[in-house]
Amino acid sequence: MESTKTNVLTELIEKIETKTATVGVIGLGYVGLPLAVEKAKVGYRVIGIEHNPLRAQQVNQGQSYIADVKTEELRPLVEQGLLKAVCDFNDVETMDALIICVPTPLTKNRTPDLQYVESVTHAIARHLRPGHLIALESTTYPGTTDEVMLPILEASGLQREVDFFLAHSPERVDPGNQRYTTKNTNKIVGAVGPQSLYAAETFYKQTVEHVVTVSSAKTAELVKVFENTFRAVNIALVNELTLLCDRMNVSIWDVLDAANTKPFGIMPFYPGLGVGGHCIPIDPHYLEWKAKELNFNTHFIALAGEVNRRMPEFVLEKTQRVLNGAGKALSQSTILVLGVAYKKDLGDFRESPAIEVIRLLKQNGAHVLYHDPLVPAFEEHGVEMSSQALTGELVESCDLVLITTDHSEVEYQMVLHHAHLVLDTRNVTRSLTEGREKVTLL
Image (cartoon, rainbow, N blue to C red):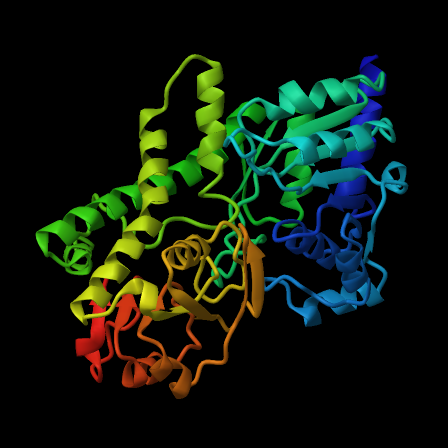
């Protein structure tokens, strides 16, 4: 048995180190496509399994649909035969390393929805062979790799640490970050045993500058949900302080600017509409759910979620106040919302609180238009809209401009010149002087 175990692992490590291993990346989204590109760049043959046929077609045409992957990076890899996309699992037996990058959303009751992880694991199990390395990168609750994936894979009759190797290496993608990418962001790796850890560490070392190993897959899973919970809690703290500053008639922005001059013991966080994207609004609930399973209440996490979810309603209230101050009723006003993306200079509107603000404005009778240079149209949570061209005439025709996303390419000085009233939730107008009297900050 020991000889078989050694031979299987030795052969896998040799393939990884000589770049003769075939890499399968399951899910070619914000995490999977950048990873696939990095692996292909160093010479691995990469096969992406993508359930969306349009995305698979775009990859095979060398056309990127992810902002962090340039088409000029992708196309040569496709043309050289180093990267291709398929829509099924028929090639799994030819692959050596399988990296899972699928969504892990929440149900309507804010409990973990692992249907994609489970479905993919079952599909892999049907094609599992000795020598496979499987790594889950999707964010999930601590215990998923050991308690959900491992039993499915071992039901095939093959054994962990002997026939196949299983690890968890949480993604740390920050969309739009120009400094930290898949290659130079420290990579956490945990596994179900030492052989799996060795295989996974060796695999990721080929393309990531620094790999950090931890004691178990569960530890690696907890690292990621803690990272995002840390951000959620601190954003909530600043958002709650914003609510207090509003009552005290003190500028939260002045407070933060001054506080952040301290050279130690503080870290910048800023207020906003709430939290958006695929991580911060979701991941803390994974940890909260797991804690309840252990009869433990995570009070901080629950409270942070409550505060952040309250912010769209606060923005609605403040919009009403600004309009009332000008003698206008919300229900008889036209509001121009600038930005529906959850983050600056991205076209991603997943879980964007700006859309919830739009929904609330509409629900209270306002006529709402929006402009976002990176989101031409969206349909989310029962709201369906298209972006309007940003012109002076459009701005003048609206009673109030609500700045919800601070995209760089928006001409804010033009907006202030033509606007009647502006509610700036991002403090993006801070350096502008003309029309400053029209601006109310969050």
